[in-house]
Image 1: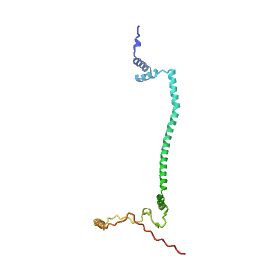
Image 2: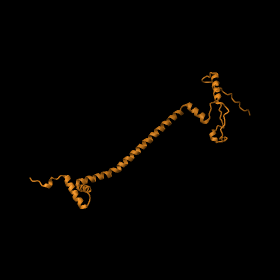
Image 3: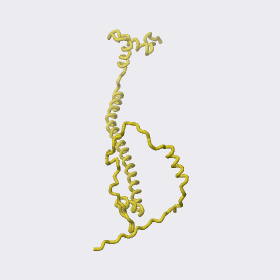
Image 4: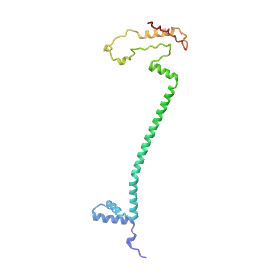
Length: 189
């Protein structure tokens, strides 16, 4: 068997020869010609075209469903966060309801909010109990001059320590009795 001299050439040699011929015809460089020959070397068969069409069709069919799936997962995550927040609110409200079932808490709230008192107790309400910050600035302006203090702080501190050290210790019972006020007489008509 005699071999033809052209049949022994390797594939890369054939490609480079084809690229060189293409470069000569188009005026392109050899690398560009090789890229062009690679693209021209792709042959489409009926099966290849069918597979590409199925791939494109699959992407067209799956893409909207995938988008809907991702959006639904985000909605589910948001709803789960909402459920968790609602459960925390339910726990807080249940604890508050349990506090309202305690008679001591109800009595304390009635005293604080509605100023209720037990029978026999006297209630005092301070009418002008407004914070000074709410009334505004009515004080004299601050002076820019430095003045000397008239009180010696060291003597003042020593006097406080001596007074505290020499004070008598009083025994106060842990639960002092609460004096009951005398009943107020009813006015006579």
